[in-house]
Length: 297
Image 1 (cartoon, rainbow, N blue to C red):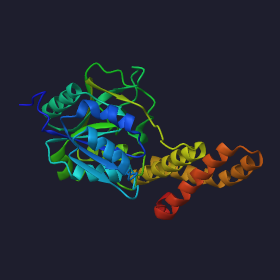
Image 2 (image 1 turned 60 degrees about the horizontal axis):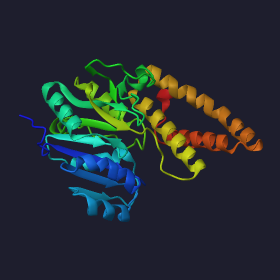
Image 3 (image 1 turned 90 degrees about the vertical axis):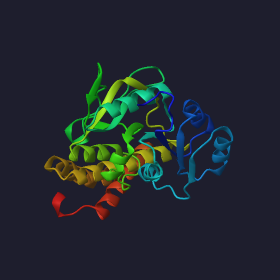
Image 4 (image 1 turned 180 degrees about the horizontal axis):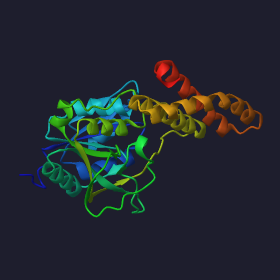
């Protein structure tokens, strides 16, 4: 029987990249009694010293190279030996009570591998937590839940899953996704083996969405646009449906016009647009060189 004060059944995996101590400290305050695995993709030894001074961390790994969030999560998941693993964003707050609700419900649903809470903003407004896969609809609707519901895809900021089922079914994140769409890809794999993903109203988390931790405005644009474009194209490439391939074809046609648009924006000194267009073109060229083949011509 699960007990609300039994912390030994859950390992929490958190991947960091240039987070401040204040943000991580706030996240860890309610998680002190759990096994916590931290993967730092920024190789920040000073942050590690501060965290270890204030918290007991089960495993703390510093990566000299940033291989992305998917690779970082996989590092942490492989170190988990508990019944459940909770993948948690460093800017995502969740209490012991809500984690207990997740474990209890996941134990109840036999065919379910993963469960996610309902996310709220810091202003206490419900935000996107789960919904359709990208090929089946947009992530623009917040579900109005009355209880528990099966979803096609869940947000990667807070996912609890059964560790053994996860590993037995080879459900690690695809490390070719650097920042975006890896949660969708994972959920699509779960669906392909006829397992369920549940979003529950009875557990919540507080999440700040999509904050890129670099100071340069142009670098923020580049990181967001490059990685979103590449990961989006790779996701649809993997699905191999006609609808997905058509999305890639359309993007390929648009990319040819983007070179003219890039030149025009440069002449008119619209540098934010220049960085945005350049980022998308660079991402498409990388995707094209690695994956594009005759199936999308």
